[in-house]
Length: 366
Length: 174
Image (cartoon, rainbow over all chains, first blue to last red; front, side, top):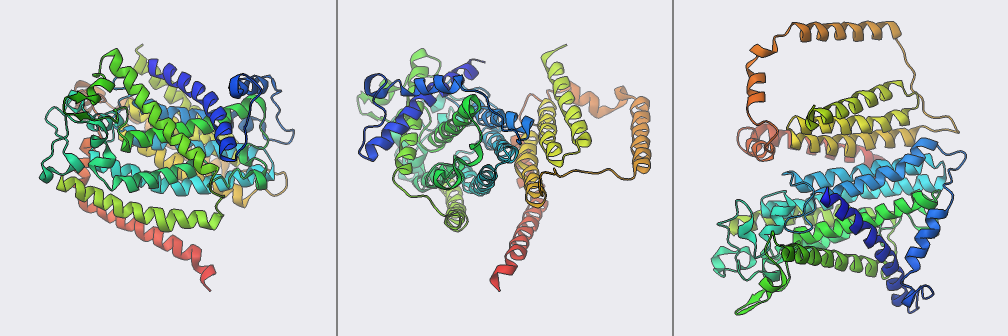
């Protein structure tokens, strides 16, 4: 219950910040100022926009299919929010410690596709329907590289539980039940003989434990951009072609919910990437000799300090990922549909299959 | 009534109610959307029965795969003008007979069976079913005792995939 409330609060705060950040980042990249009127540097702009949105009339188009139209935003949001249930925000805070962990996460966010279809179809608008079709073709295709990249990490960590994966990548590995005897070697290779279990920091992250995971992370990142319908994979929403894609007919509160779900998806997937590859809630700073940076910047599990630093590091990593997503959005042009499918099926998927094989080999070497 | 029992009734009601909706809606898309609730309710029932992996697989395959394909198929093939794609019912009498017959058969079986004397029911209620994840057990079994059927199924699916891609791409290559 606590995790539910914390994640809901986090998501709402994050959305207000993210919309503001998106406008400011895009403005600075395009060498303009962005919102400047409300508050210092326009900081209150999103809150004002939100108040405006909530006051708007809840319009249902006359020829729309009423009940699916009304239900679709809720389904999309619930599907995305349910994904946070297995996300370990701190060493002690995780909604559910189910053993199926990340597999459940991938399963539950696939319900979002049904919501998109419902929204696009029931709007009874050709732009909505086209947007929904494109969106679904894209999400279904890119679920393959995302799934394979997640399997790479799961094969290497030998578990699907995100909390166990988080513990493996830091100095508190011995605190997790069953890992008391585990040792982390540099690059995951026992033969190198460099024990980094007590050094921690970025040296025990999955990207360093298995150096090829950097490539896997890049693939995961590209594929999650497509999963979130973010540019350069924003053909489902392509403002210049489709008005707004599947949410063309939505306004007011329901449109805000759709937006919340979209930004929530970004947060969920960047957080997942951070947990799988970038050490989760572990600190990036290693212990260097007597300078115990890792111990200073991440408290023991079970203490208040440990939870605060854990949440701080995970949220920081996720926000970093979201910043890169925004940066990419305002840098690259939109892909064509055939380029999109080429990238997914002929580049990312084969690369992921090879990397999956190499991850298993690396596990056997280590 | 414990929380688990209450949850069981909630999920059972969801499953049965939405299954009725699937049958009674004339609009095929409404039926497909209520089928989503049926699958989710069923996944909930699996979790309550201690089959956590099966529940997730149920969602991945049926909601993420089959249901999407179904809705896609309906949307791409139907919907000319404003008419919604409707399902019609045929063979009322025969359907009623088959359904009624099956129902009485199951009812007689349930009434006549003596649950206390069945070994597996007693063992399932005595050991801590549902307390432990089935994930590791299923994984180990698949990689040891059942590795041949597992691989054969994998190859079969691969062949089906290649065949589907070949048939779909046939027109474009010439």
